[in-house]
Image (tube, rainbow, N blue to C red; front, side):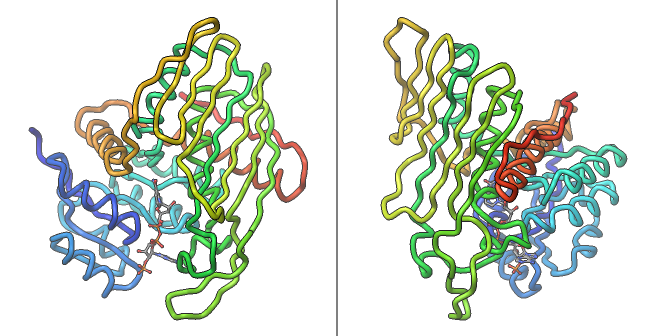
Length: 347
Ligand SMILES: NC(=O)c1ccc[n+]([C@@H]2O[C@H](COP(=O)([O-])OP(=O)(O)OC[C@H]3O[C@@H](n4cnc5c(N)ncnc54)[C@H](OP(=O)(O)O)[C@@H]3O)[C@@H](O)[C@H]2O)c1
C-alpha cells in the first residue's frame, strides 16, 4: 500500500457525517485537518474525529505541512472560492455537488484545477449507491433509446417549520434548495444513461415558507422544497424528475427507465427490475443505498486518480454537464419556458 493521502476537510455538516468517518476508516487517506466557519466548531469536529488540526481560517488550512488534498463541503455558493484557492496551492480537490452556483463558476473551478495540473473530482456519490449503479448498468444493457425516464423522490423532512432547522439550504442566495440537494444527483443519473438533453422545462415551489433556526426564530425560506422538471432528449424521449420534501408520508426513491427495447425500474423497496421487450421483468434486491458506502467508492476513485493516474470519476467534466442542465432548469423556472442547455463537451 502506498502512503495515504493527507487530506483536509472543509465543512462540518456532510463533512462530519460522511466524509470524515470515511477518510478515517480508509487506509488510502489520512485526515489531517478540519475547517469550519467557526473555529470552536472546527475544534469540536477535529476532537470528535481524532484529527490533529482545526481552524476557521481557510488559508491556514491550505498551509498545513504535507497536505495533498482538500474536500470542499461548504454551501454551494462558496465552493468556487475554496476549490480555486486549493487548486492554486497545488492541492487535489474533491468538490461537493453541484460544482458551483452556475456554469461559469463551475468552469472557473475546472480551469483552476486544469491549470494547476492537480486531480479534481465532483461528489456525485448517489450514482455510486448499489441501487443506482445497478439501474445505470441494467439500463445500458436493456433499454435502448429513451421513451420515458422518470425519477420521483418523496420526502417528509421539510413538512413542518420545525421539522428541520433553517440553514443555508433554505436560502437561495447561498445556493440552497432541494434541486442542489437531490435534483442534481437525479439529473446526473439520467445523464449517465441518456447524455443528450435537448431542452428542459421546470417549476419549483416553496411549500413551507418559514422555518425555525437554531436560535428559535422563524426565518423565511427562499429556496425550493419541491420541483418538477421536464426533459426532452435529443432524437426523442422525455424525462420527468420530481421531488417533494414536504410530503406527509415519505417513501423510497422510484426510478423508471422505459426505452424502445426494454425497461428498468427501481422500486421504493430498493428492488431493481429489468427486462427486454417480450421478457418478464427479473428483479434483484433489496440493494444497498447507504451514502457512506457510496462515498467510499468516490473516495477510492479520488485516491486512484491521484496515486495511480486513473481517470477521475465522477469527473469535473461530468460536473459541468449537470451544471449546464441545472442552469437551464433555473432559467426555465424563472422565465416559464423551454430552455436549451449550453453545450459542454466531455473529453
Ligand atoms: N454528496 C452528497 O450526497 C451530499 C450530501 C449532503 C451535502 N452535500 C454538500 O455538502 C455541502 C455542504 O452541505 P451541508 O449539508 O454539509 O451543509 P451544513 O451542514 O450547513 O455545513 C456547512 C459548512 O460550511 C460552513 N459554512 C461556510 N460558510 C457558510 C455560510 N455562509 N453559511 C453556512 N455555513 C457556512 C459551515 O460552518 P459552521 O459550521 O461553522 O457554521 C459548515 O461547516 C454542499 O455543497 C452540499 O451540496 C453533499
